[in-house]
Image (tube, helix red, strand yellow):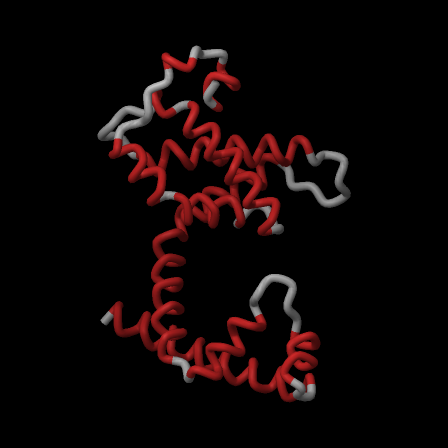
Length: 186
């Protein structure tokens, strides 16, 4: 029995894999969907869980998608509904966002997405331009569970030294990103 037949009651013979075009669009949108969800949910782990739920819904509804229409808009609407469901389930938490605020944030993210994508590309470019040791320090600092203090212990350097190095690297990256964006606009 396939996952679809378990969740929808269809018989295994009724399942047809989605078209290659659908799979390509589905794959292409993963990062954008994750960033869209993350803009509304502060925890990357929870955003990842919502993305998985979103992916399940998208996959189950693949036959409803009309080829030639805007896959990004269609999948983003599904993600928006999954975020709202998640927030509804989390109503008991102290810090809650109203559906109106979530909607406003979602709209702003969609409007800012091209600008944010330009900044992400500039950051990727600038990271490649860093010295190897600086790039390694950044990667270690932003690895899951890492902190400046734990990094200092691991590297056998004073925490203040690590913080100064990270501050210098961040300034270098920011300057590089700003130059790269200015070049792109010129």
